[in-house]
Image (tube, rainbow over all chains, first blue to last red; front, side, top):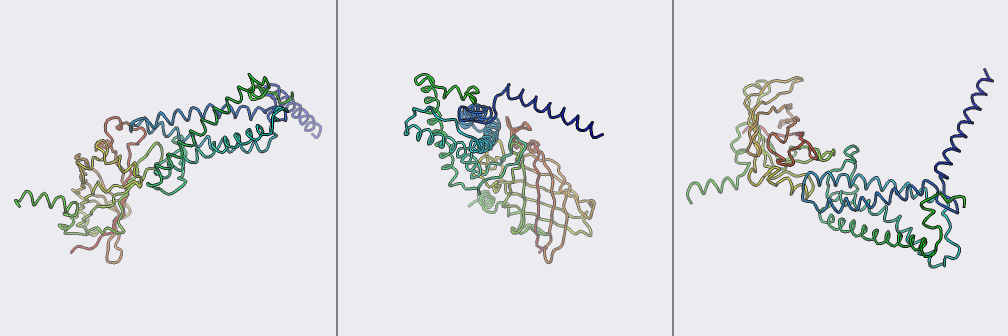
Length: 211
Length: 188
């Protein structure tokens, strides 16, 4: 009886080891290293980049519509996606804090290191502040919200007619700031790739955790 | 001033309360009476209430079938606690409260329902459309006053509320739940 249990335990462990190796080969390291971004950070980066850009387009488009059922639906999707992005940003921030950050090329001057830290901090700040400002805006206007028509979502503040337009302006202003920063961010990545010819852009695209 | 002009002034000034003065039965008092509704807005509960309404109940729970129940609602007093929604619901596709400022329920019969409750069968005129509806209610004597409570559900499109592109059971649901908890003072 004991032998059978012991034997099956060994086989189980072998299977676990095998699948973990196979997983590692297919997606690479999950965690970041000093050399490169792990699979989770890379995938979260591109997934959120795509969702955020889609979200900006969706918000702008829906906002410009006359009051129609389509507008109400599109704004519900915008708000649902926005709260999803807020939760993703929090998870991503937690993951970033729990992981090493890949180092910058050694010849990077201190002012650029500061600029990187500042702009990345601001990107994280905006990824949190934009959905929160949208949530506040919706709460101040007291528009009922159920995420994806499924999850009743509470307001973040009491209805406030006077403050609502200003919160809307803030929401838009923060998006503008994000677009400026994202442009700088993408520009810097392209500058690294084409001008500096280093791996800063490539390591966000591919697994460079071991080199 | 000629007679039509006087009537016009009265209609504008007395509003829904003209009926209240003519009430021979139990009459609602504004506080703490509540007439609330709840619609669905993209899957979310969208509550609102009517600030001004009058209930007149010629009613004796020991002899309910001889009673009558009349409810007049000032539709312009609808409040969803949101400037955006409050503005939207006055529009012609919704309540069109500029053209139809008052809704009125008049019972044709009152019957005894289960659990000591009652149901008033009658017609509701809302946004110019008259439809038969049942108004279930319980009746409690609470000191000097009576308390009439109940809930019912309406299909908004039966009254043309949310017309045109809004008539689909889409972002704004068809079903609207109505709740009432009315405090009434005794007949004069």
